[in-house]
Length: 215
Ligand SMILES: Nc1nc2c(ncn2[C@@H]2O[C@H](COP(=O)(O)OP(=O)(O)OP(=O)(O)O)[C@@H](O)[C@H]2O)c(=O)[nH]1
Ligand SMILES: [Mg+2]
Image 1 (cartoon, rainbow, N blue to C red):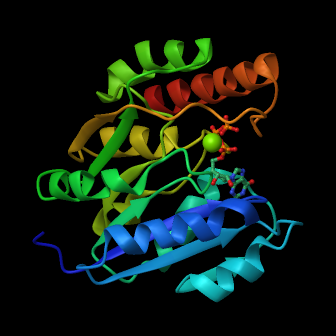
Image 2 (cartoon, protein in one colour; image 1 turned 120 degrees about the vertical axis):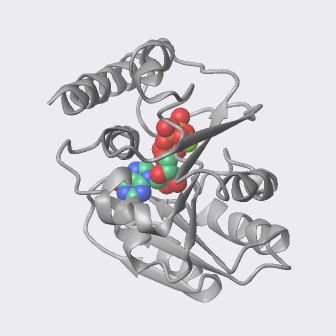
Image 3 (cartoon, rainbow, N blue to C red; image 1 turned 180 degrees about the vertical axis):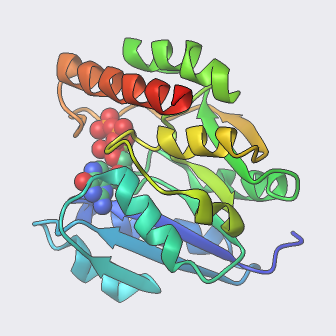
């Protein structure tokens, strides 16, 4: 891999059970690559930060602001020219990181899109916003960014589950790429809420993202 170094950013909200597995799996995949792992924890109550402090290279705790702001917070701490973002809940298998990194030679942002989108709101998002930005799964935050791209990211939309980064990238003419992966089964108790609540939150994020795209 022709990579000078990779900063891996993950955000956590009560992920004590998962963060250790995740970090070990990332280090295993990136054995041959200089890297750092940055954990942005929004004051989890389960002791996630203690585990993160022990195992990550950078572990910060702050007040709760949601995933999108947490990702940006972490990206701004990155010291390497290429940044991988990944969920902490083991839904994004670090095995796909090498393929993402390959694409970073050609693109400013690369999204690892799920081949299966389980929620109706995610399918609607894919068919609307996804078509506009050229990505199947605009809600996947399993991505790679060239660090220079991050200076463009001034968030205006509140929580958009990462979609605003793609809107900004598209509006700024950044090169957006995509790889596809088969997702594991979704965990039984989605944090984002039950089916109706989750769909409403995602649809609200979609509306905001479409507005941000247009104006
Ligand atoms: N820092 C921070 N991280 C968060 C927050 N909410 C979620 N996360 C993290 O963001 C990642 C994605 O969140 P999830 O809750 O898994 O969202 P999802 O994958 O869309 O939904 P699920 O179906 O619940 O898995 C996980 O690593 C969470 O720990 C938050 O408020 N702050
Ligand atoms: Mg998840």
